[in-house]
Length: 620
Image (cartoon, rainbow, N blue to C red; front, side, top):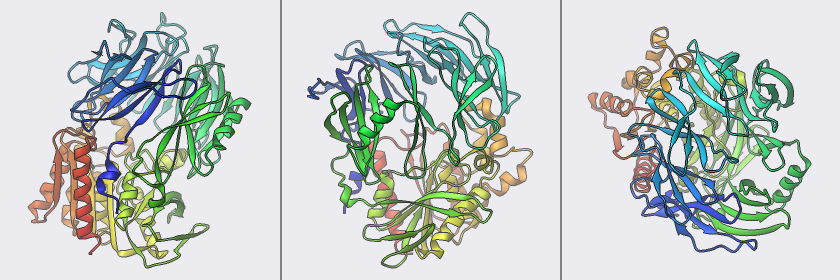
């Protein structure tokens, strides 16, 4: 049996990026158990130079980084999980390490890396108003910040053109509507061109090469979001370029060198869906797919010439590997395995399955079984080829307006290695499945959304896959809420539960959101529930108010600095249970936020999970 630590160790090397000129690679690797930035040279023969460490963080891992130019890395990190990310810069030789946005209590984000404007990037800061981010142009040489526009309080996002000019703003108006504002030049004032309600989507992805029109995704007058060409001056849709019958459009691919739209991407159930507008891009995709039959290959990064690429290759049974590829010659070189101690043959398959709810929704899901347990799929019908029904950990995702994906999961592989099946489902409201599916989740926390989870579990029981007496539920964030709701509202279905940074009381959750979520509060009231207008429903679906219904063991884990789900969400759940004399395991980490990022804290959490499940799921 693989040690627990091997599943949750920091990757040996990961998050590779190539410099714009193609001469250097950057990556994250552990230093004193924290992920830090390293660089190394690479030549035309794919020979790698000796890595050089650029950052030496020991309190908190680097959160993200990017190449600002051929000689500078910009990176971000927060403090103790508070998600107030600060931006820093360092040169390739390790010199000129500087803090750009080291303002207490302020969160920084990158709006545009200004690929064609050397030495500058555009960032957002909520320095002036904690609820609103102002856009600034940051000079990376001097650290000077130039305010580009003052956010009146309701601006939520921006789009720049290919020259780095701030041309589009997304604003919240009347609490629940989104308005797109546009200007031709930075000397002009923004003017509104299109207003939609919160159920509708219009998102400008990228200006066309002439900076005149935009490629956008939208669900206006349709169910699935489509890729369209729009006139930003009027908000008029000029042409639908691509739409899928089941899935929303996800992202697009664009050649900065050739100034061409290359293709569009949808996630799909198991296999990515790609549609190409460019023959060369299609040929390149076929070229790299042929290199790794049976595996999933993605282009992680390319240099400015678009000839030198970093490929990320993985599957559901490996954490993945990076390769260097030269398109003109077909030269391929292995760079690293992110977790060489993980052996694919020792891992298990993630099966893409689906079931239908009692009210007719088709739910895509993923089922992973312990080693040696084989699944037979005949259409949507499942059965075990061998062995008795197995214990299962039901694992609803967070968000909730997010989704689960097919691929490698350390949690899934760890739980399966301990003898448990893992069941993940994209319940209504999961993203990527169209507008109707999304809207079906509004004001359905603990109701229809929870029913989708319950009915999926019942389907597995009827199929003879899982042991009805040994079912646990575990989730984080919204998934933690779903775990608590599961043992409150279907108390006899689960024999134990784990809540990881989950919501327990919908009233207090809505009262303690981060300040920069507050402009969206009325939208949240429409999506989750209004504490005044929907008071009875929120009271009925808040697990902390129904702790008397819980009759199984519960383990709760929480970061003390969580800005999204306040520690009080976990505290009140624990207090309500202990007031009734019910023991509940409670783990709090003072240097963590919305999930545990520090390696030693991950180890502690999963050790506690392993012990808890062995005690209450394996033997119940």
